[in-house]
Length: 182
Image (cartoon, rainbow, N blue to C red; front, side, top):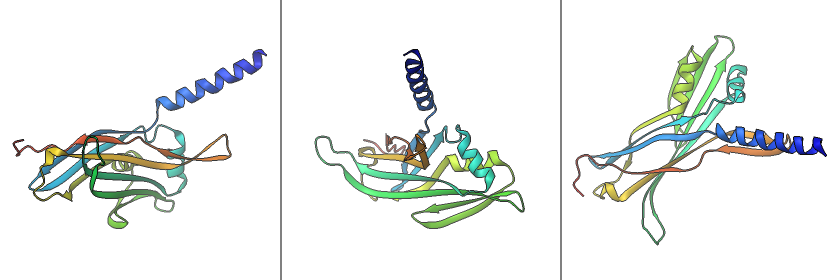
């Protein structure tokens, strides 16, 4: 009986400790200037598990997919979606040159490719999103709009048999407008 309760306690301790370092969106900000909204955020604890670093160092393409949505918040009614973007950041090791390749895609179109010789530089570029003029809101009042973001990291396995998508929670923030007067 003591072995069973110890196993259950060990299982719950592992679950709680794994939940403590879950990846999450931090420092989300949205600023409207001249009818265009710029977005910035960071993905914290993305590489805290050794699996992501091992995958990068073994040459497997490792990707983060960010979903960003701008919408008009309407209390007690359905929100009005104004736009949605999908940003994919893919890191791969070239085993011959020992350099890391970063491909940055927005809405399935390649925006840029960069090479890095340092793993920490690649990790920083994969974690930080800074999109200038991502959404055109025209003459809408920016302070009535919100932006939300989340990240899909990779597929993991629970109990070695159940496929599990590692995804952050939605993080949302109101669009700021330094030049507007509400």
